[in-house]
Image (cartoon, rainbow, N blue to C red; front, side):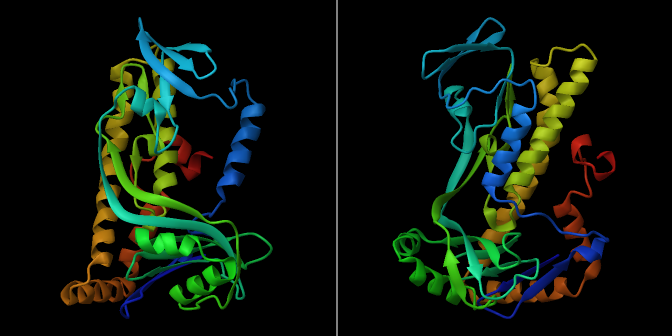
Length: 328
């Protein structure tokens, strides 16, 4: 598997290969519905209770526990609540967890498309004047389907979302410089506002935030879901070890171990993505020269590229047990 990135306003480009770190693949592109179906299957095969179509209305402390009120009037009591309910987390809102956030003033158009040419098991990303456009390979009916994430201004997003499918495909093909031939068809489009958000604290007594409930990141590197998986793996490890030692898992001292391991890593990656986003949105000629020259230079440095690949694959750093290849 390969990754190819280039600057649409210049000549800079960079290529990453799984072989540079002796790996078979650089990652896996999995449609959200497939992940959700797999998780639901695992839940049904476990002894975990699932409350389908439940909506949280209120949360308040009751002694050492949380008392949760659902929209249908049911009450739940729990010593520990894990907020894994996404970017617009109801748990984060109801517990009044403070955040730092700002709007990118861009929208991401997301869909799946079929192309005339094979994607060659390669992830492609072009930095346009409006924002990054990514074609991510899917294993659907051979090698001609890609998931796309197209970052554009609000006005451009509004225009693209109302186009007929064939006109949208032509616009997309042009923006992508026809790298995979004609764009033949597209699934239903989704338009998502891009906003960076980070909770000032991930934990409180009896409360832990993970994934998008704790942090959202620009999608240009496709690392958002990976950060969420690492959050879940670290929290599971912390709680398991605490239970084995006879500690109260809802205690702030226990949950703080999770926060101390994950917050610095998340903040560092968010800062890096923010820097890349600003660099590739910059129009002054000196900055455009800098990013094109930088891409060309790094592309000639196999050791540096291997370092980036190892970091993206989760082959380095303080990895939780569930994320280590040798523990599977």
